[in-house]
Image 1 (cartoon, helix red, strand yellow):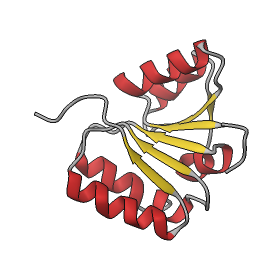
Image 2: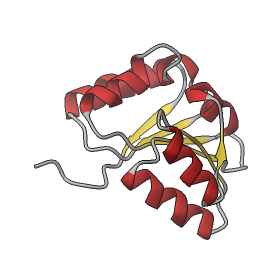
Image 3: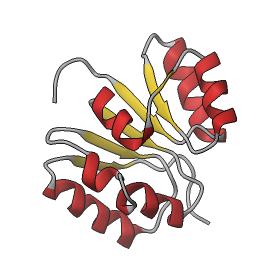
Length: 128
């Protein structure tokens, strides 16, 4: 990883929007991707750069955060076509801010490690 601390975020819904707003307010530039064009426009209004897909976030960032609403969407972001397990690069840090399944988190972390990336589980809300 470089010392630039470039931050990217996949998912700028309710929680991701707050992260984007706070990071940009603190002077940390954020590159974002979301499947919802309205959310991307909102993030851009907050000062983020919209990039093309998960690969674009990985290319623009040293640290990649994800904020997903469900376990299925987390799995898709990692394992789907063009997902993190194919796009993350060596030395990259992936932070999952989503509330997830611990078994899935371990499996995805192992997959990230195979690419030389490090995954950190940092849910913002406890699972119920």
